[in-house]
Structures are given as C-alpha cells and as structure tokens.
Length: 346
Image (tube, rainbow, N blue to C red; front, side, top):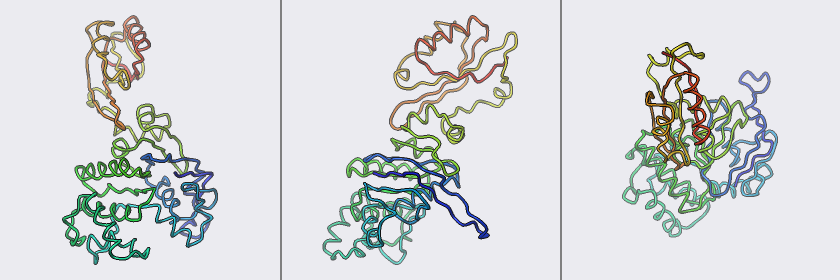
C-alpha cells in the first residue's frame, strides 16, 4: 500500500545556519491490508515519515508511493484526490468545537461537494460503527477523550479511504479507553479491509494490534519484520531498549545487585527462559527439573500475547556446577527453548 524508496527529509535548523536531517534514507514497504506500526524514540523521525504519506510534508529526495501513486509528483488537485484516499487520526483529535459530532464527520464530504442526503447516508452508518449514534447532535466539549477520538476515526473514514494513518492516536487516552480504540481500529481493519499505518512510542499499542513493525532511529529504519518476531528476538540495541520495559521481567533489587558476570565456587546461574510457538504449550519447566534435578528456583515470570500469539518469560536459577549447566544446555538444544544467561550469584 505504501512504499518508501530512498526517502530523505531535511529541515533548516532554528538558527537558519544549516540543516537538520529528520530522515536519512528510508526504504520500507507497508503491505496492503496490514496494521503496521512504526516505533521509535521522540525525535527519531516517526511523525515526519507519516506526514510524507499524504503530502503534509514533502520529501527532500526519494519516492513515496501510495497504492502505486507517486505522492511527490502530484499537483495540488492530485493531492486533494489522494487525501480522500488516505484518512488520518491525530493525538489531540483536531475536532472543530463549533460543529456537532455529525457535522465534524460530515466536513470532508461537504468539502468534496456531496449533497446533504448523500452525506447523511454516509455519516449515520459511520457513527453507528464507532458507537456514537446517540451523540449525533453533541459538541466536542460534551464528549470524553475516547468519544472525541471515535469522532476523529469516523471523520477519517468518511471519504472511504484505502489507507488510515494514526499519529499517536491513543497517547492522550487512559489505558481502558486506549484498549477500546485499539479494538475499534482492529475491527475497521478487518471489516473494511483497510490498511493501517500507525506511529507510536507506546509498545503496548504495537504489541496489541500491529502485524508488522518497523523501528526508526535517527532517521533510519534499523529493524523491521513481523511484530512477534521483532518483539521476541530484537536484534538492534534501540529495539532492545524500547522493548525492555514492555517485555522484560523486573527482578527484585536484592537479586539484580547480587548478579555478577562470572561464576564463583558454589554459585547459581540465573537464566531467562523464553516460551513462544510450540514451546509455549509444553510443560518444559517440569521437564527441565527432571533433567537437571529439583534444585531449580523460579525467580519471576510473565505470560503475554504479542500480535495474537502467546509469549512467556521465566527467570530461574540453578547450580552453576559444570555438569548441571551442561545437562541444562543439552535440554535447551533438544527442545528449542530459548534461553539467556543473566549472570551468576550465591
């Protein structure tokens, strides 16, 4: 649906003395029908990247194709036509306070020149889709944050776009409201066969709904792939840092302070076991005890879901004696269980 080919974007710095590189050469493809997440730290280039898709920003070099159309080669009229095919929802809703819910959703259709009957035939089903049929005549000041975002989503869908852009659309919402908005976006993606491209710094958002993910750092895509693969086997240091709080197990300070990189006589080894795919449904912890003996302590654990697939982590400790470690390593190799040695301690 979207293809970035060698895309760069430079901005003049605030002092007017030179340029700032926001995007340093982006090559990336967003599959049709997917929910694709772009994650990165503040200032990494996420917002600039998504604003290039509908021509709100113009690339310094490179090509952006939306369903085969070169965005950079469009006239003003062509851009207007493109923007009817690309809906966008914003972090702070961007509703017009003087217009009702119905009229906010109807605005792009009025601009497109549709008559009132045709507008009503389009808007009423959208308000039902987003669960706001009873709020038609209300004004934004009378709505909650989640309701305002639902109006924004309905407005973005009014022109029947093929692509929906989400610019930090849930970061101003509480966790419960965020989940309801994410459920709505998943439903829209499924029922309308709508491609969704979202940017966010919230790992939970991507983990919950995105099938594909790309990590951007200093204007470059540093990692990409299926969300489950990237989240369970992050390779780039930026990805590992971003995901550490989302997927990591927080051990007590008295444990972490005692862990050291090399073992001493009588020490225990602390190991993080990762369960996914086939290993997620097997009693491998019990089998590990059978293989190396009963002296296995469970220190911490978590069970999660990433892009609809099960994922679990367990931190255990056992004797760092050579024969015990060798039996454990042989067990991991035989079962395909992923493990990470965290260190050693008494």
